[in-house]
Structures are given as C-alpha cells and as structure tokens.
Image (cartoon, rainbow, N blue to C red; front, side):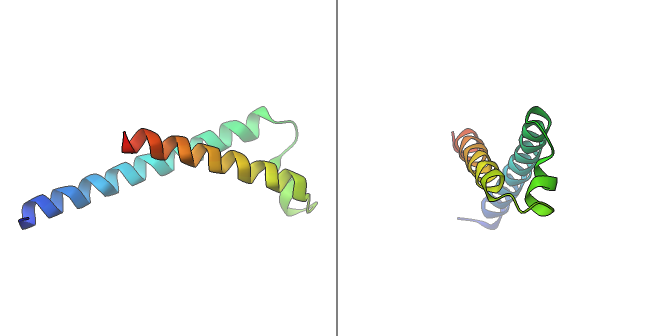
Length: 72
C-alpha cells in the first residue's frame, strides 16, 4: 500500500466515525424528547438505575444501527 491510499483510508474512517457519532447523539436527543421526563435528571440527580439501564440499552441499539449503516 502506498501512503496516499493509507491516508485516504484513514480520512474516510475519520469522516464515517464523525458522522456516526453525530447521528448517535441526535438519536439519543430524540429519545430524550420522546420519553416522559428528562433522562439525565433521572439518572444523575435521582439515581434511577432502571432509567439508566433503559438509556444504555437504547444507546447500544443506536450504536449497532449506526455501525451497521457505516459498515454496509
């Protein structure tokens, strides 16, 4: 592999990773809007572990979907 190909592959990887993170954050904020109450308030201030487990399951599902979309 030459340097140009390696650089192009690295640039593509960084672009896809950036797009994936943006899509993940937008999806998580949409989830926060659609659920009753505020997720961060429930998790941070009230120490509600069931809400934290729900949010982490949704985050994992979103991450799998974004990774599958990027990977093709």
